[in-house]
Amino acid sequence: MADPSDHLLAEELARGAGALLVRLRDRLEALGADDRVVRDVGDLAAHQYLVDRLRAERPADTVLSEEDESHDPASGRLEAARVWIIDPLDGTREYGEGRDDWAVHVALVEDHEPTAGAVALPARGVVLSTAEPTPLAEPTGGAIRVAVSRTRPPAVADSAARRLGATLVPMGSAGVKAVSVVLGTSDVYLHAGGQKQWDNCAPVAVARAAGAVCTRLDGSPLRYNLGPVEIDDLLVCRPEILDDVRTAVGDGSTSGDAQG
Image (tube, rainbow, N blue to C red; front, side):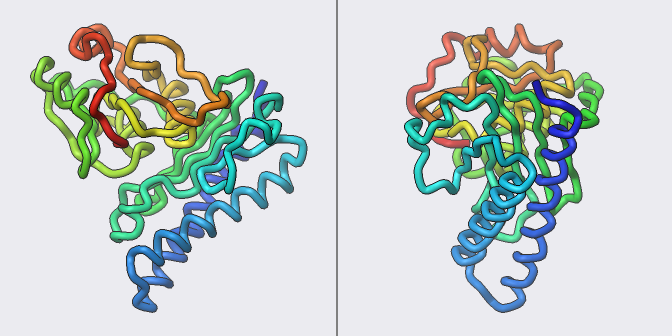
């Protein structure tokens, strides 16, 4: 299982990649680069930083990154005892637009479970990790708040919110939405369709360590380092409202939803 140095490394890498991305965006914007260039350059630079550091610090481990040229299970990652699943820049749209709701994800997976992880929100100066977990924020006592994509809210979240009498809270990347439950800016994040393992692996590690419930919509466990990189659906929720949310979700149908 992960040891203290793994938790600290995940935090250090997320923080370091985040600082690099902030500096890089500032420099590119000063040069007048357009959004696409900012996104592409940032993605690749953060990927290279993380991969180089992991090769140096954990040479025996395997890495699965969004920016890998191939996610082919034949690469040997399915047989690896320790796999780092990383998203060097979660929320490329927000990063390119100069917003602050984007993230860096770093997680260690063992036996299909995230055992260490960190999520950096670099433009906000925030890093959450399993090294010293951030406690789940106190409940507000008001209407339930559901974190959703600011551009493509999934139908399952909209329908559940109506049943709950909840408020939708639009925000950027998947990582930002997941850790918003920890930070207290939302109470639940539920999603169906379009995500990959790197979109939510590190956020799930961080949210679980904080005390949130993280499962599939039907309550089954989330599993990582599987052959297919897709994650069909996800629920990150405060424990005291879990039963109400699961009832509102109903059968957990994922039809018609997109990434968010």
